[in-house]
Length: 560
Image 1 (cartoon, helix red, strand yellow):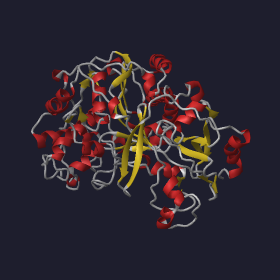
Image 2 (cartoon, one colour):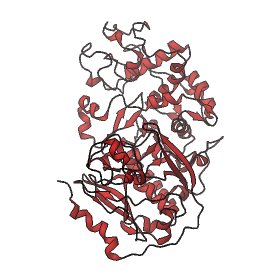
Image 3 (cartoon, rainbow, N blue to C red):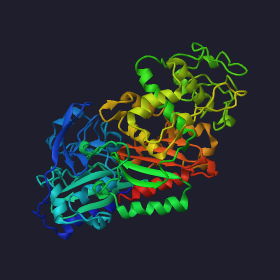
Image 4 (cartoon, one colour):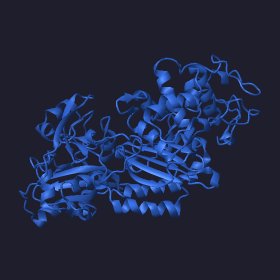
């Protein structure tokens, strides 16, 4: 049952009951740098503003693919004609009002609904204390709210667009601004920010997800001037508070790493500089299935230049294996192999796949059925070498290692392994340092660009990190997942894509390379960070996925 107006209205009307007087105080900081953005879906152009390390829309979002009084609405309009709604003077001044679900869904490419932490960073940048910012209710000072008002100095220019109740009534235009926040509070409510015409504070409350609020999107990455690249060594960030971090809370992560993980090295990088460094991050050691994500990266250049044709079949490539492949299996394409949907349920030369889940051979057509399958991953390595004429490790050294300046790479330590009596296609494991794992993640975060060189095609990075098997579809294949609440991933091209419906908003667009015993490279575009964690397998210990996820949660909490 949805929350009705009577449970939300007292919070909104509190500002008027208390009789606050609007302050004319101005923030003393510099006016935010203006820019613009065009949404190519409808040609609308928006003013943007750089405030601290963030880039925000400085106008209310107004994309109107449809209009009603429940999901996407225009203040005062109760029809269904987009053309009529766009003629409204309220639309032209205030944009549209969106339910929380639509606010999350409709962000233009490269933009996203701001998280609660994004708002806290904005608020502390304009002068609110951190102690105040993390409170709920009305908090802050007259200076901080004045800075965000229309013509208030920041260029954020809050517009008092009012809001729509969950049953279609419109309220408080010219008196209130309500903005959706990406964080869900519970099944019915999500966080919001409120600014009133006569209030000297900013409200941090929860609103009914069915209500219609204004939307201001924030960029996936910070202002470009903050983006750097490491040279011979990663540089430690001098002032983490500039990006909204609490140094004290980051320091607490060391205790968690010692007490709760078996990690032997961890690095967290934001915008090209380290904010956290734990353990021996220079040491080379085995990184298991992270190898698959590395291989996927190598493919991009050769797919783009036509050397590798993803539509080629195993039959065309003359690929067979121990005991022979079925004729139906030979119809699998390279694309089917990369998505682990080959339909070839043949034993792999190494353990670690899900062979126990294999259906009967020949029972699934290529391209129709996902199984996390080491045979597919190993054959992907063979195909790469066959089509490019290069050894995987040599290609990785020339195409990636040298171009992004690995610190500890040793070509002599990179060796294939496997039982060729089971399958002739060996596994291509890597030995790598945590610092170089972080470089790999940072190359992905920067869409394949390293300084002035496009090392990987940006379009291939997008393809690798687009879901090919969803979280929901994985549940249909692997019965263990129902007992694994920490499992949050779908599958891309040999990268794990954060896809669960209950992931934190920071994970929107995030992806991870994983390896047995506990090796992880996680790329989180919403925070412009990379996390590399490694557990040295020879010690016989592991940092499991649940423990790693808790580490990420504690990391996120360091921005509150």
